[in-house]
Length: 340
Image (cartoon, rainbow, N blue to C red; front, side, top):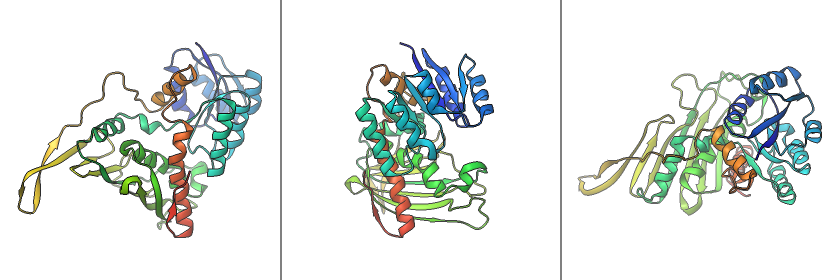
């Protein structure tokens, strides 16, 4: 079954989408739309197959009647564009954040439900191998129930463009990946948060690019986040550096390929229980990995009648709610409940 898509928003982020789409059999991108026609032309050239080019994504959806909208547009255009595509019968795979507000996010889910269409988010970090390995390892119970997760995110990118003038840029544009990874790996959801944002001296962003947050999770667990987009030197991975504690042991991940775990045993050596290393099993052959490709394969399979995608909007809104609650906490200086 061939499915046809329109891709809206042909900036730098679209390259990963196009590369993933090229690897999926019987998926055709019939049109590329961007306010800058040169970017639409460049995206079509990258695709390398015949496709329509235009500057009006909604009009292109009306004209081509695709099965899918790939929404890579800027966040400000998201709600109107996705609403239009759902009303025209499109399934939608959208960039994060899924909306600009919780009200908009909830509205899009209702629209998708009413239209009988699939709405999912390109939460691509869920599909990288280390996160899926850690999720499976923690779910095995060998470390006992998760009691806390801690992560550090420190990078100094010079993006230019909309990010450098965007409010709550770290939380809204990047921390959604980290917050979603915490939910994905632990299987826990957030109930409340206290967060602070600030602007370090020397920042090249118009608004606060640094944040620290403490989340209260289901079952009494805690998740702490420390991050900055103006951290010069000693950079972490884009996936953060993690320490996850269970009742029987701990796991650390450097955000690259180094994952280590230890479990405590007996007998006790004076002050401390004896710890021994544990192997984190590799993924099984056929596991859905590959970042954008993993998400897109999952989504397209659902469009073709398969199971609901892992990054469906109904689940992803829980990660988006963590972001929006953290923003409200930073603005108010108070502990804020995380509500969907």
